[in-house]
Length: 127
Image (cartoon, rainbow, N blue to C red; front, side, top):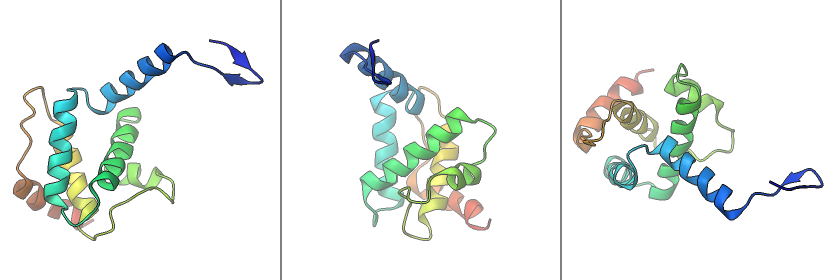
């Protein structure tokens, strides 16, 4: 890995390997898991931009993966002030409910339904 003027230059293969490692950290069960999460995000918060919701979800998931003892509230608080966040009042609690379900998921990818996640979000709304 060459180093020029303090900048490390990575090969295409190294960049691809790092990207694949990152994707596995966020979605260990691959594209099927990512698609399931995207679908649920659209269902539980249809009025918000799906890409923004996925970005917020990924940021939270990365924090939790890197710091397993961190709560969802701590992970959210540790994001930069300018980070993309849900705009609706019910957005964050619903994403927290999905994140909680995702932490228990296995290769079967049997997530709760959108209605179940919305109901579970009330647990996070009261905090």
